[in-house]
Image (cartoon, rainbow, N blue to C red):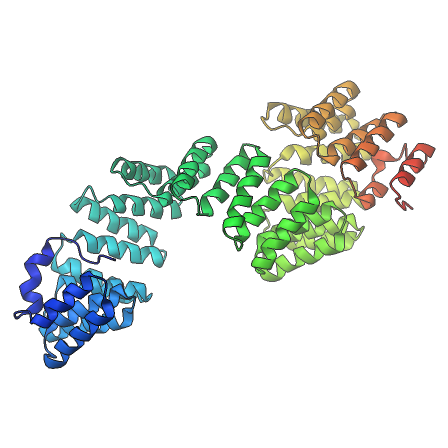
Length: 531
């Protein structure tokens, strides 16, 4: 049964509420209520009210029964009628009425009733707590925290208020303070899966992935039928690069909740990371089928479709994202990249220009436009855009420096190009997460071929499932005019799932092997119609 008033104040207010002695029928009705026999209880209460329409206590009692039965509108009518009959503000009635209005999503009315309750009795901590719950529903998280804090000042051991205040802090991304509230609630023996789930999410958000998994495992232990902790656990495992277990965790999540579109989306991202593109497309498609307005799922599926060379389908997905969100800069950038892959340079630059128009400080959009201009080719204009991207402090600046260095090489400015490649190496070598492909090319263009090969060997050892690692090695050997080695690694790339023939056709890094018999034999091996 739901309790809507729990303090000893209720005992003190009984004479005020009822105003007269209780009829025998009401006594019998209350006995039936305690037994859960609500229909029989209501019949007796209806009889009492019919005989004594001004009996406020009976209306309050019947309102409680209606509340227990989730007939909230009827409950509200009885509570308000009782208040009107007595012509007296009563804490119990306002609290009960506020709870009923909360249940019917009449949030303004609920706040008004709980405010009346604490105005009458400022020590009534449950009313502050209940008002905080209403404010959570209307996304007034700061107001909710203030009410939970007032409840805790009155009753410092009100354990649920610690949990609720922590949950409100999570909504405001105040994760450290939220964890403090959750830990205090645990000290008071609050042992519910929701707490450990929120604490796990908070620790995940702070980058405490191992600690988050411990909390999420506790949430799962407390209620293994809840899908959300499995999803969050998958997120944390993914950050730790434990991809297979992350996938298993997402699978548990969507098996428990087949409509959990976010779990399918995250599973798709893991498959994308593992270069399992077919599975990734399937995951994103399931997410979209569940939620046809899921922007991220369309965007992510578009990314995979572009990787596997299904450019028209990719453009369709990016366009769908733009249709739903006309200022989605990343969708314009990715659609522009896809158009570049299709040699639609005008369309690609148009998308880059729109992205810049939406956000003039978007460094990635300038990088895209510069990258496209490389293909036209307009190396001077490309260098200008690359430089602008660097001025805007683009993430992964080393990639921009690398491509600017290559553009400078194409213009014959080898000294300035070398400076860019040296900066690339300096940045990557200091980084914990190294991009070995870009590092390898930078060493190669500085004349350190052995070092370049060593870098790509590390990448292949680290990600043996990724076809691009083998493809990049093939390109490097081609640039070095080591044809047998280039063919060997291109063959391995195809074995691992490389399928971007359009990219391969345009890739100048492979020009040294494209006219060789070995290359033609390789194309025939995989039944590719290359030209």
